[in-house]
Image: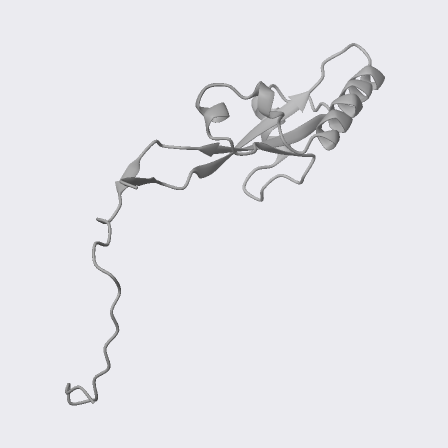
Length: 125
């Protein structure tokens, strides 16, 4: 072994999923279908992960419809989007990111382990 990879860091990516239709019932129906899709799959399928994300071999977890963090409210998001409140789902994807950094390993041990006994003065018993 000549080097070690650093442990991947995990990042939480937050998305607001919503539906815009002419009828509120349709918006709720679409979001309900999306919610059940996310509830059936706690992680993204590995065959859908590409590039560096697929190379890590680590799961990408998905949580949905949890309360937002204390520092962000849904009202703030909707006011930034024009003020009209719409039904929505908060989707959080936790992604492992491998920076690709390697740390050199210590040189291999070349001598067998030896154990010696000494008293408190440093002399052998």
